[in-house]
Length: 470
Image (tube, rainbow, N blue to C red; front, side, top):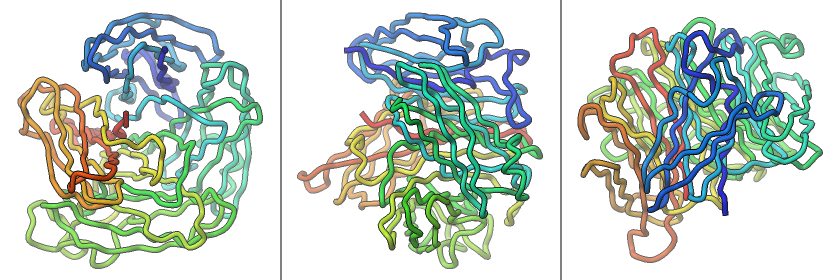
């Protein structure tokens, strides 16, 4: 049976600075990496769809057993291409897309889609909010035209817009030019996308600022849960900051409580934060500072705010008063100081949904690096089981491993690959978990940061992608 991955590549432009696509005041270019998850050759076909729905190019490749292949530049399409991609294969695949601004000063990542739904939720949408706007691309994963309806909610405003998308194609919605959202200054809210045609949809959301090169991306949600988990959140650790945006997609307001737990060997204290979230809207946790008492003020290197203290760990929804379905994302940023002023560094990843049927004991990490043109990675793997688990991560072409036993439910294993593998290393990884007591079900999920140690401080050298269960 052929297996498919969809990549919403209104961003998939040839990596030539003159071949760009502009949204929210910026122009973009990108490439993608594909990982073969099986122990035999994968024969793949890549179809490039224009925004009108026509196939602009088709190409075939073979990826070796458990190997990865980088598609950079996109030589199978003409310069200036913008659209979407569908990859089909006789083996299981995982894919990560790296996005750059056309001047290579901004960067972000997201994962390719293996499935979608006729309803998509987008927890964080902004229109000229403190110089930040979003835009998002919707891809029709079905075999017939899909007429989509987008509903925005937040700050007392409700707006809609619509479009018809051909099979395989994508359409862009730019909030910086949405006149309805202009009615309220610094608009921040959420969006829900539906289609009456029943077609499966996929989405990616981009956040872009007009004052820095900060560029962030996340995948839209087609599932939800009453309980969410964030694999890696940090505050004031080497000037970091994290804001977690939780959207209530239910019909009633609910009070949501996040519990923060520090990772082993990193600063922080267990603490909680509770916010009321109206139906259809979203709220921000953890920004600009985590709740009082979360941070350690001494005892660790890297603490950059000795008043609020530093924290590195995970966050889990432990309270949901009305049992409403939730989705969420985490924005990771770099502070210019101990306050809220930011540098260019920023990225986004998706919350893990408790009870998600796609959770397994194994995750793929398609891009792992150590000082590859100055870029290195850091991973966080979260225990989504009901019991303690032992987690082990291995990586292609190296004996380096990451492992930790007795990881508690809701806790994560965190590790940086900076100076841990070898100069110029680039490869992929696999993490597996087993129940610590030898029985029960082990479920994990996580994320990977990619950070440039050599990029100018005015560039956004941070990207993040979600691990891929299989």
